[in-house]
Image 1 (cartoon, one colour):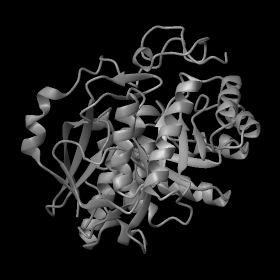
Image 2 (spheres, one colour):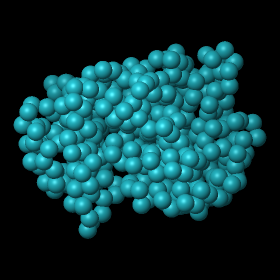
Image 3 (cartoon, helix red, strand yellow):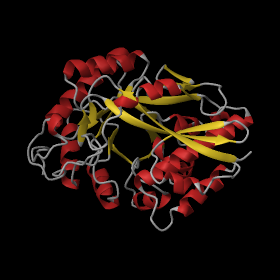
Length: 396
């Protein structure tokens, strides 16, 4: 079997409501979703979700190769970007191709990827994560009741702009999940997406912990700040979770060596091989791993095969437009299907019909860091979090 070419698509994920975090919003809830398909001379096509940056250059590292040599081809792609570096969206392109290669390998073997990788149980525990910072109280409650109806009893909220608002919203979600669980205490997490300084993080979380039990605080400071994460971890009761924006083992080593993270995260966009390697590194330090992503299907399959998987993020209950997945959500978990490969099917007509809805890449969103992040004095309206404003966490 040989790799013969690739095709690219871009669809959208339509949330039907505003989504975002402390850095900004997609006000109409329409988010672009790039997709890569790898074709082979035996008619098997693999699908990966992720960027198309430098795709032609990176694809040259695997063109004509046997796609089943996945980990070796992953390293070939990394070597292809040796001089310029492989961080950011370029690493996401490698991850998308890597995920597509794993899809091909499992299809060729006639097995779902979770089985090929050595998984025993198709059930992957999940937590609810609604990218919900813009929702009012009624909308927030309605959203998490929907998650609760699917058996989820753990939730992660977006916050970081106002201590009292975060406390208020976390309490609402706690009560929704506790009611659904007949009084059992739910798990609560808060994700602030790198919007605080070290002092802000300790003071904000310590204040919340006066009345709430947080399972973890996510990305409290900048992603590369190993010392800062360690300082935050020593100053609070909650665990510190981070890693979704780190690309390559070399970026994880300083944080793990410093004892700076309690929950090691990796994003679906970076690919299956990256997740497996990070999981092994974390396992060597007795740390759990938790995949992140809007459509983390590749990492869900991989999570079944690692001994230190804790829980996986579940954002929207609907997939992107034109993307059909062989999985379902029930009893608080993803249940993976038996379709060979990743179980991804593309409806190319639906994707083409959604092309006019792809947002302008220059438009606002949570990918734009506010100018004054970490240098704010007053609570902020999340609707202004992506604008130039100096009004945010009271703890500078």
